[in-house]
Structure formats: structure tokens, C-alpha cells
Length: 254
Image (cartoon, rainbow, N blue to C red):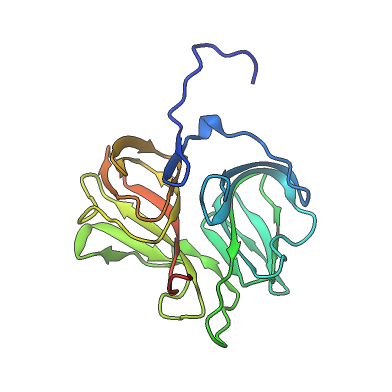
């Protein structure tokens, strides 16, 4: 990277336990023992206040896991291909996924990936699964580009896609893509117990986090802690879209 060409500055803001914005320019590499040929940035973790861990991975050809990821007892995992292509092995099956491809592995199943294209951008996620009775989640794979958008909260300029089943209580999490047309917005300022990790896929928006409005753009990562007031407006000339995690289908544990 070499010497800086200007004063050191950043748009990053981290409020431990509350919210965070981490731009691409501030990402650094972390050595993960069972991942090779990749620049791995840990953008959310319990050290921040999150209940999950999320990674942004820039991979070179043949880069990937050297052993299954997320096999710890009770750990569920999710992977999403933002750019490029990669082989993903989960549930004993291996398949090559292009951009938009994803896989969910239930607790202790683990997953593996290997980059096929010259470069790839990959999101990786893990959290501890919260059981509910005898219900068991199962492996889910697909390409989100094959999933149709649906109207979000009766607004025709905001749309959403779901990665995992929304009507199966075996799942305690989901991933979604929310897309705002320019001028589209949340119908109200949300304040809820769920937390989110969000990676911006396209466009620009103005986002309210707690009591602060910030400009957010493609390749930013955001984290919202529980009960953090939040909402957004899409701005610019293209859809403001992001993939985000959500904990769901469970009561609060005391």
C-alpha cells in the first residue's frame, strides 16, 4: 500500500454495544488458522458487543478453508458469494456457486469453500445456535438471484429477499437483502431487540443509527446492537441495497 498521500482520516465509527460503521478503507487482515489465500477482516464480534462473528473475505484463486469452518459444538454458519465464484462444501455435498450463491450449515455441521475465480469477495458468518424443542434446522443452499423480490411493508419502492425459511421455527436466524429505490425509506424508525450485521451491496443511503445520521455507501459494513433506533433513505441514482443478518424465532433467555 505504501506511504499515505494525505492526512489520515476515516469514516469509521464504533460505539461498543450500540452500533458501528466500518468502511472498506479501514479493513485489516486477520490470520485465521484454517483459512488460506485470503485477506480476512473480522468486522463484528463479541469484542464489539455483537452476539455473532462476521467476516469480509477477499480471496485469491484456490484460496479458502483448509478444514471445515464452524464445527464447534452449537455453532451455525452462513456463507455468501458477493463477487466471483467458489466451490462450497456443506452437508457432504460440493457445488460451485457464482455471485449470489449462498449456503447455511446448521449447528456443528460446518462448511468449506475454495475460490474458483481469480479473485472473489465472500461474506462469512457464525453464531451459537439456540435450540427449540426437538426441531432441527437443515442445510440450505441456493442463489439469491433466483429469488424474487417482494414488496416491503406495503411500499413499492422498497423490496426484500429472504435467504432462509421464514415460517420454520427450527431456524433462529435469517439473512435478507433489503433494497431501497432512490427516495425509498423505512416506513418508521425501528427500535427492536434484534441486532443486525449489514454489508452494503450497492448504492448510497442516509442511515440513522441511534441519534446520528451518516452517509453510507457500497462496501461499508454496519452493526446495530439491540434497541438501537435505526432507519434509512436511499439516495443517488441506483438502488441502495444491503445483505443483513437477523436473530429471530426465539424468546429472550434470562
